[in-house]
Length: 459
Image (cartoon, rainbow, N blue to C red; front, side, top):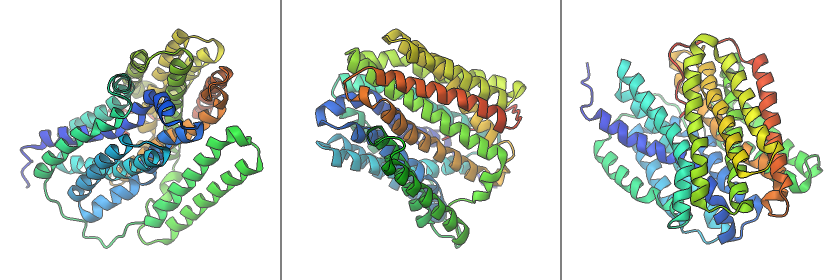
């Protein structure tokens, strides 16, 4: 029997810090976006891609990254992903125009897609039994903490040394973590199976989602029912169809699509997609409202977001205690209903206080829906399929962020351009209606699932 790694907890800490950086980079830019827009003179469409380019590549290539870790060894993929992410962060911070900025965000997403699943693979191989559950709990907490702290850190850095430091901060942390992991990560053997990387599958699913995001971002200007919007969305559907065909024909598919035909897995992916879309939409709208129209500085805005960020942790904690007795369906319905009530407040009334209170209430509900998503997804998944299910859940998490910011950017286009405030009301109204519809759908599609062990980590 192999002896446990004596430095396993230190190794976990380093991997968790790396994961923290990846999740942080989803929300840390929310506060910096208005400053980036002003300094680089970016149009609304390009500004939306600052968020979507990262989450699209992160989500679209994550399953490929997990497969690469199996084939080439987790150590090699972890170090490569961390190096790419750190270097890309430097490039993004140095950007003086949209091309370099978006190119850097794409490269960050590629690095994150390699690093995250490979690092999680190291964690699951390093720990066993009760220690593994404890380690996964720490891993999950670091991922959730990245989302929560991102908005506050974004305000501190943007108000201090400048928005570039939202990206530069990854450089010293990444270099230190890389040097320590280079010495500490154990060598591992690649898989002995003769599987191959399904690169075409990864490209088609990413291209399909990217095409859909492009259509949604431009719908605010072209019209939601215009030929250009509908035609582009049809192209996205076609790309998804090609992806499904590739998965049925290649020898080593990116994912077994049959797992999505199971009701718990399909319901869980729906919950995670909508939850993330709602959260990122609120952060996006709230940041622009407070900074553009209330003329608050980045630091003040970041501090106002702190109760909003903490609300996600509170909601997840309450849901974790409730899901074992009431079931995931009840938690999901209550979560989305709470989110709808919270987001409806800024849809009806204006004011900074209303914005913060509404987002705080809404985020409590969203935090609960995240727990319902993971509990539902893993309800009937065999341990041998846990890695695949976790990868699918994480993929839809990132896609939700991409789609959410794309849709709300178009809905609130007039306000983001700085002309009127009515766009914010429309954006929050759309989010509230989406949450209310999701609550009704959750009642219909989420199976009755109870869990005594709480939620499985999304990331």
